[in-house]
Amino acid sequence: MIKSLHIQNYALLKNVFINFSDGFTVVSGETGAGKSIILDALSLLLGKRVGRFSADGNRYKSTVEAIFSIDSSEKQFFSDNNLDFEEETIVRREINAIGKSRAFINDTPVLLQVLTTFGKQIIEIHSQHQSVLLKDEEAQFLLIDQLAKSEKELTNYQNELKQYTALVSKLNVIKKAGNLSSSELDFLQFQFEELNTANLIENEKEDIENNISLLENIDGISNAIAEGEHYLNNEQGVLTSLSVVKRKLIEFDTFNELSARLEAVLIELNDINAELSAINNKLNADPEQLLKLNNRLDVLNNLLLKHRKQFIEELIDLKHEIEQKIHLSSSFEMQVIAKQKEIEKQILVLKAAAEVLNAKRNKVLPIIKQQLQGHLHQLGMPYAKFEIVFAEIDQFHQNGNTNISFLFSANKGIPLQKVDKVASGGELSRLMLVIKYITAQLSKVNILIFDEIDIGVSGEIASLMGDMMLKISKENQLIAISHLPQIASKANNHLKVVKKVVDNKTISDVVALNKQQRIEEIAKLLSGKKLTKAAFDNAEELLNQ
Image (cartoon, rainbow, N blue to C red):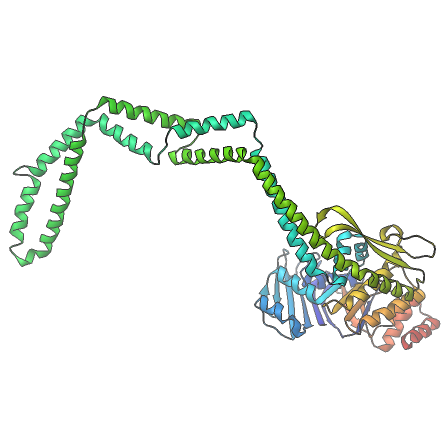
């Protein structure tokens, strides 16, 4: 249950502290006093995006904080999100002047998504306009699966639907890739033959360019090698002179380190001398070889230019890509047939999963019908009829292979029609309350908040709705915003939202009413601002019922 709510600097609520009790709490107040702002702040605390701000431009930040009494069954949520579990859990959200917010659970910062998940597990808020959900197919499927406890079957069906969708997507890719005209296929074949005939080799272009450079500069290279060998190998050359120095140094231990370094230099110079000799041996002024290399380089450069590539490796990749396209095109029909067979098998699996889901849903329909009609009769609709109809269709969607319709008739002799076609505002309110009454017994959520769920009703019907709310509150904490005295009188606790002017500024506050104050408030709800003795007597009678 929610034990307290503290709101600072949020719209008209400057510093409001509300204590809640278990059971049934009603919240009343004049239109515009700030009742909806309280619910807005509570929704904000549970993950809703930032909507309202204080009109005071000098404010530093807005804060909404609540203390919840949490059952041990929620420990898994805290464990999954690395949060400390506390039986009295404190949730806080802070919003700065530019609308950025921070959220905390038991003083640990959390992401907004975590806050939203926490809120969905412990509290359900029914807004003034939520009855339109009865006209929305998505919400209707959600309701039926909740009542039928078919979430497992729905998840299994949706997993099979994902596989089916993935197969269809792959088939489309195959069709798109393999749908080549004969001219396109001929052009690809030509490109492949040209690249394949070229016998492309990685790094070949660089090797050719190096060899061409060698052949084109053969005379200069020969002279450089000859001169190098002369300085290295003659009687007064570097190798001979260094060898003499080395022999002198090794006679003395003082030069051990220098001798070793000199030995390394001699080894390196001998290697250089050997490589010069090897290059010299390969030198051969062959005009035909030079012509052959230049022709090969032209072929490679032309291919690179033609296909707008920079490296031979890219041409090799292009060749493989073209080859795959040709192969795909040649085996196109076989691949399409194979994928279609996979899809046909998956359709059978998907249909079977849908049938299991439909069976689970259909099993609960008579029970839902009986309960809904029974409770509607109790709420002053003795001839009310309600049906839920599934119609199978030739396609699969997220909720199965059926359409869903909520059919309703409030009066005797009137045929069933879709809820959104025939239900009035008061009828929708009663229908929604009955649904909440039934689902409250199954839901893990133990805090329910109704924002004027009684719109469109009055008198005896309102009293009957109040009785039903009181029944709900035996198992769930129920907080209801209402303008109806018949409902206000049924509550265990009564809060009033008041608006006042302080320092030339309008602010709202919340007051917990004692019995005498409740009588006065209910009398106002009965007669308006002008209080009469009859209104007081009637209010007292309502409270004592």
